[in-house]
Length: 178
Length: 205
Image 1 (tube, chains in turn yellow, blue):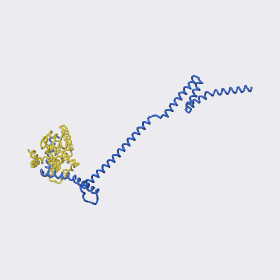
Image 2 (cartoon, chains in turn green, purple):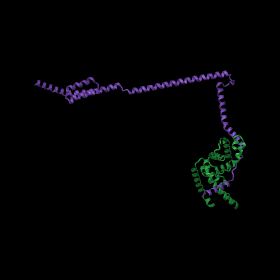
Image 3 (cartoon, chains in turn purple, orange):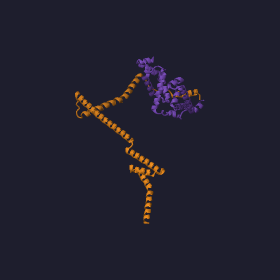
Image 4 (cartoon, chains in turn red, purple):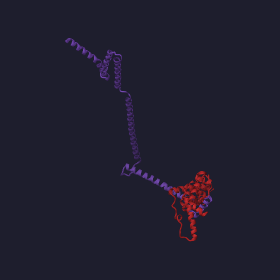
């Protein structure tokens, strides 16, 4: 319905699409890029690509999946442009030592989660994408394979290797939380 | 580490990071950005084309005449263009002739080379004749030697050696024939000498 309206030249239809999917696109981009938090450029690029390509969209898949594909490709391009992942933010690097007891617990949690994010960020791109789509976006195997253009077998291999690496990096944390 | 643990840990970490920030996006805004991008990408190209046109015009004006900026009438322009075309045609013609000339020379050189190669493959007739002569002289010598040494036909051998010397006086086998003749005649001379001595002795006696 929205697509038909957009194809007829109704800009409001595109605004509705943006309103509906922008948060999800931003979240995915944020996770794929290693939580830089400011993903305005990427989101703008994604919707600009969507705006120019929407007339060619044949509806073979869901609009959400199509936008996710654009997001993945835009993030890959963005990473290539940067040449490397952004440097680790200060809040991720070291906890504040001067805190009261209640805040200390929060700081410990914060440090733990920062370490987890850092471990994900350090994964090679092909493993990180699978981890993000599977564990954070909660997508089904079939959809992940479609989005990344890989076979189920390849996806399982990547997921296993990513899990192995995460396990190596976060072994202490798992033992503590268990 | 189970899948459930990983999922929980990752989701908690993601939640702790908080939602990402991004600006407001609208179709109108995107249209504006696209227009700006087109301008940015199209701008340098247009500027380069304009610069080329200006440069071309400047050069054109300089060729026509540096001082006068008066625009020539249409007919003059056409006439100058016709002259230029004729000049270009003449240049092309001259270049073509030159190329043809060079090609003809190249062909001639190739033909000459081929003829020389063919000539080189033909054996030298003088040399051939010399070889044949040598061979004949040797055959005759061989025959004469057989007559002299194997068949003891000394007279026939002497004739044969003399024939060799007569026919091929400068040939190396003629030298050999002379040597053989000397060899044959030596005992005869000695015999005649001894005969002469005995005659002298008998006379003196």
